[in-house]
Amino acid sequence: MSIWYCGRMILNYIKNKKLFACITIFAITLLIFFAGIEKLQIQSPIKLSIETKKAEAAYRFEDFNATSPIHIFGVKTPTPKGLSPSQIRKIYNLPSTGGSGTIAIIGAYDAPNIESDLNIFSKKYGLPTCTSKSAGKSVSIDKINSNKPCFQKYIISSTSNISTTAGSGALGSKKPIKIDEKWALETSLDIEWAHAIAPNAKIMLVEAQTQSGANLMKAVDYARSQNDVVAISMSWGGQEFSNEVDLDPHFVSANGRDITFITSSGDSGNGTSWPAVSPNVISVGGTSLNFSNLGKFISEKAWAGSGGGISSYEILPQYQKNYSIKIQGINLAMRAIPDVSYNADPKSGFSVFKTDNDGTSAWYVIGGTSAGAPQWAGIKALGLSLSHAKLYEDKSLAEYKKYFRDIISGSNGDCGSVCITRKRYDFVTGLGSPLVYKF
Image (cartoon, rainbow, N blue to C red; front, side, top):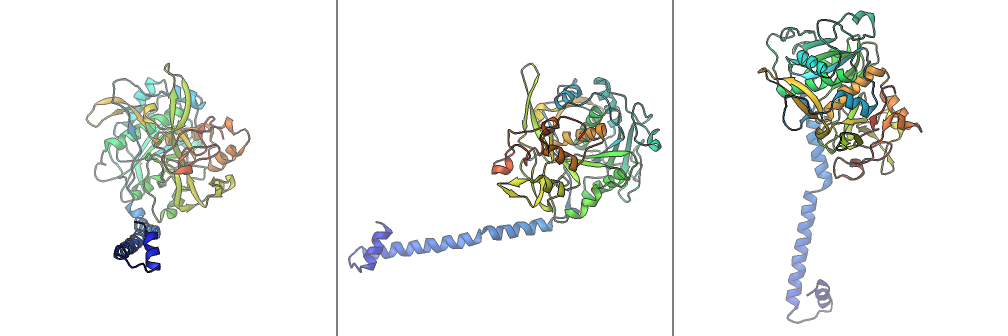
């Protein structure tokens, strides 16, 4: 029996035994209708949006604790199984020597064996020795730092911004700094591969007491004030927060030089993170490398884990405004990430050597967008020309293919155009992967 049929009976006042059934159907229909309206009101997107914004507003920098986007592929082994420096140089058209100035690596907690691990890695791949004892083959960009050692390690005090050389424990604090093996593995990846890309640059490791935003910013502030620093790599991040714009001045040079700040975009697929969204930071997304059965490089596509999206708080910076990033034909109003990309898939991961605190040593295959940040920092040390403005200007050129490998296949989620790669710029791999070291 249809509602239309019942309606006709009521309207025509048909008095038969079916009238009561029709009235009952109408009554039930009205109850369902109003119950549905009430449910829709309860689940209103506007109300949900308001509640979400309230939750976001309650989360602030004071609550921030970073994570390192790092992934181990397979099991640790006595010999390297991942990609080597020579393979990566060939894929991204990078030189086997070069680099000047100092690359600062910002990490959390202590990596007590990093210097010895770096030189085991260097010996394996024929890289220059880089120790805290001498400058070695490292090249400074000013005379003041020319005699400083190739490798420097600092621990930042939890009570001040004053740092001290950490040659024997945590000299910046009263008690030993905590050792976290996962963060130490991140440090091994960052230090070893920054050196692999720019073998003649100095390396400065600056360790924060913890992974809190406040402690990490103290480490950043120290690094950006050092004379010889040309790039600062930050392979960590976390959820955006309502007062993140206030932190942007921390990612500006304080040494009178053009420091480039570089970070990973995250490993959870579509979505943004801080400090990647800061307009003063180059955000590095992730790709996956494809090889033939004989190990020959074939192609590069987006990695599904690559972080990317549109910031909730940072407005569109001028360099992206000039480039005219659009979504569904509409110009963006907020900061988009990532800016560029680099290999991040653990299946095509990097060889990393690490000694644990118990003395056991092994080689790992490591992936994640955190691998790209120190290597882009190495690219800055090679060419001393990396900046947001130059990246976006070069991609605007007709001959942009000599600067970037445009990543046009793959995605990082199921969210339509924001999750799909495309020509020019996309929210998965940014402008693409490097094919030069001078932009």
